Length: 557
Image (cartoon, rainbow, N blue to C red):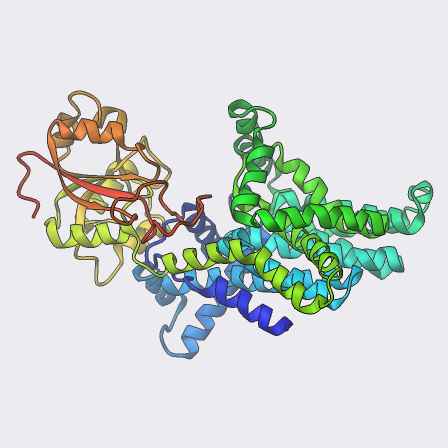
């Protein structure tokens, strides 16, 4: 039964894993893998500390292993050849990196089974594993190169290790828990909360009154945690000034922004809505609440051990910006609690085993439906890919095209790329990205004089046009001076592009439109990295894409 559940978890997470490739539509994936790949040229210093370093090291090691396999198979003969292959087609590195999230997600299902076994029988454990296997947000996020799914696994393993602390309390138990907590912390800063279940389990073993007096093991676990963090993410300490600045910047995104934009109850309400409507589903969330109450009534020690991590983490989420991906740490515990409630309900019937199976299927039906809908979408051509193919067929190479950032994946011509780099970074040596792009052989034939609608970015190979000028009265003069004949806009949310569309109607004609919706349907587009509920009205992923041709700029067939 467990193997069947693990195979289900694997299938849901691996189905659609190649979404978008060789194009990558999630900017976080690009920045995370790029930072990992850059370690090959500069050692262990990632140069950025929005996250700690361990996950980048794991990805870098995976890329090294991929290179070794490719060399044994005779596909590349040097690291330089492997790098050239990456810039030509990054599909393989992204598949390997995404597979790490898949593996972490499947292992997390096994960890949930082990968690449930500590406080209940195998029937509860199997049910919990099934619910974790189908929970929507963990399935969705396992398709991407992000920290959140591996951290969910690491947090569950720390709580598992804490069981030994409260049962035996040997030195090795504290060391093991501290080591796992340090690994978690070195992968993501918010995993610092893994010290909480260690402290709670220590207090359960010694008694609250004696917890401080008999604190040697707790101090040892904390010391091992910090030492492990220092070893696995050393440059956070070595380059502490820059690390502190990056951590403050990340805090502003997650916490200060929340305080400025939302009412104090807003994040909590939004997080609960995401869990009930997508992440776990309404039935699983209701069962989890009932399971928590049942566990507290049955054994406060077991409840304290299991709930310490999710309670403190949930408290943090109530003050942070409500991204669904940050909830991943909670789902292992939600699955266990829901399984406890379902098993108790099944025991009231004459045939508890089949009733429990039926309850588990009913409880997991909503997220499983969303899993299947999303996975099917992720095997279909994204609207942005379709638009790029249309442009390649209908807009002559070398034409001027203005495109929104994180939109249609277009290529600059080699001459335009060299001109842009020379203008934006005069006299500077070419970076690895610019060298890799220019060295592609064969170079992409469908290239354009490419402009991005934005106010600028860190890449020295991208030319930008300010959208406030382009879509203001007289904006067509800006486009014509730049030699732009076509403008590409996107709309993920209804009416998001209305202002741009209105401005373009004054002097341009829409020549192509790619919608993600079935005919006559509308709504929020399904971007797999967005917190949008999957719908059968969506026939393919991606935002609505429109291509507009400026009047008098050619036929734009």
